[in-house]
Image (cartoon, rainbow over the protein chains, first blue to last red):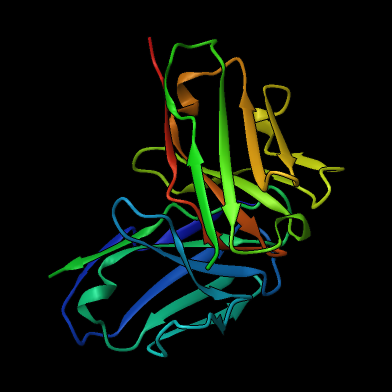
Length: 107
Length: 117
């Protein structure tokens, strides 16, 4: 199975900050990497698929990059509604595994 | 509007069984692979099972193989998860989600399954 790790596990930031979250796969997954946002008590929301393809309706302040084993989710200017937990997920091979999450909270 | 509504969760003793249901609407259910994804308290999501459009293929994470069965009724626009021999580590919110070749855009609200004596 492909193991996904994320760093940091949590971070504190202020509105307007630039935030970067890293995801690493235990083996190469090409660009088969997706990012989700989850707020408390809600289902995950897909933000980005295939490493960098922004989903319809997702603000352009979100961006993704990377390939192989190392990937990054960037929020260019953090907004109040962005405080949440973020997960990466690989779709290269079954089982389709998620990372443990990065919680972004208010500094 | 795509809607997925799960039901059937609850408290069950270890070794017990439970059947989850998901009612789908707002899209052509029979044209899409479907999934169950679960999330244990404080953990990341975990893919559980996928099923092909016509139900001819089912795929599972190793930890549930032989205990869980995913199925669908395209006439009723419904997805199911039969869970047998439940273990405490199966405790989670179970989501029904529409599979789109690698990821999930549409999710239900989830149903909580608690396995405890």
